[in-house]
Length: 190
Image (cartoon, rainbow, N blue to C red):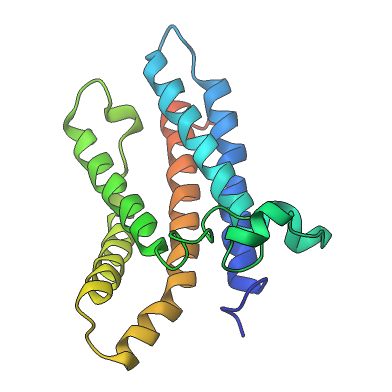
């Protein structure tokens, strides 16, 4: 029940991505042009847009909450009869590619720790175990699409997909919160 549409897991995923979006906007505003590269603002701004897009896709752009009809154009091409892009025929059932892309982007972000210019926005090592889980399950899911292992394992991995999406959302949120702390450390009260 927790993994069904509009369930606790899906709603927590929405909340995590929406908070990631809000905190990303806050971070963009806090980054000072004099002390930080403008590239930071661009990268974090781009992430904010991605987080907003994912959050809204998770709730079908409000359709889940406000219960409005799917436009006819989307009904024809959307496998779940929703106002979402990730369920359009051809993308439906292929979300493991997006989960893997997030994991690989985080991996690239880990390597930014060695880059003097981009290290302030690098992915923190303390979150690398989350990346390991996200990448491992996503790689297996992609592999299973091309070389099916067993139907029981495939079903199990498919059921994990909602949990992995939630993990991605909370990883994104933690990343942004850690960046806020890194770029503007908490002031100590005397």
